[in-house]
Every structure is written in structure tokens, then in C-alpha cells.
Length: 149
Image (cartoon, rainbow, N blue to C red; front, side, top):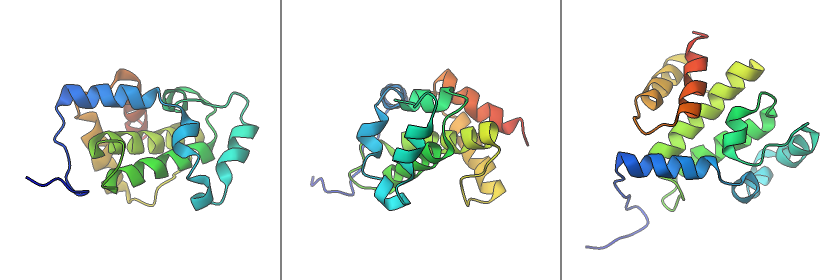
């Protein structure tokens, strides 16, 4: 059997939950430092302007005042992770966090940070909510956005 860059691992639900929890506690600066150049340098300014800059993805989801540019950058990071063959995350975890960033922007800022149509967004969030390994904080953010529909 040959393993190449397109080979994906089939993760068990308990493993996906562990990976999600680990990613939620990961430092933002380590993951997102390479992305601002792709997005017009908004991240450093957004972080500097934040009253309490988030340091982890858990803080992005939990803080009421997470800057919108931080959410956009994190969303793009998870979108890239979903499709990249050498992604540090399983695609399922990346997509749950992708939808969670979109949900936080919509609920806390009243802004839509995706070009995805409404039906696709609803299906994506419903899919994320059906994952048994999603933690309560992330699940809560996803449920909050569904209450606006």
C-alpha cells in the first residue's frame, strides 16, 4: 500500500472530538500568522484593536467582542484546512470550526462572512450539529445561529 499526499485518514468519532478540543485550545498566532498576507493584512490590526485579543480558537467562539477580521481569518484557515492534502486537521473538524466562525460572526456581529447561499449554510450547520463529537461550546454557537432563522 502506498501513502501519498491525497490519502486521508478515517478518524473515529472519539478521535475527532479529541482533535477538536485540541484545536480549540491551539494558539491563534501559530495557525493564522501565515494567512494575513492572503487576506490583505487585516489580522494584526484587528488583534491590536481588540479590547481583549483572543489567544485561542476557544476564545474566538467564547468572547462576545471577537473582532470580525479575526473570525474571517479563522474561517479562511479552516476552509483551507478542509481541502489541503497535508492539513493539520481532519476535514470534518475543519468544517465544524468553519461553520462555527460563520455562526459567531452572524450572531454576535450581525454580519455574514460567507458567500455560501442560505440553504447550503443551513445544511452545513445542521451537518455540524449532527456530529456527536462536537463539544458543548461549539454546539451552543451553532444552535445560537439557528435560532435566528
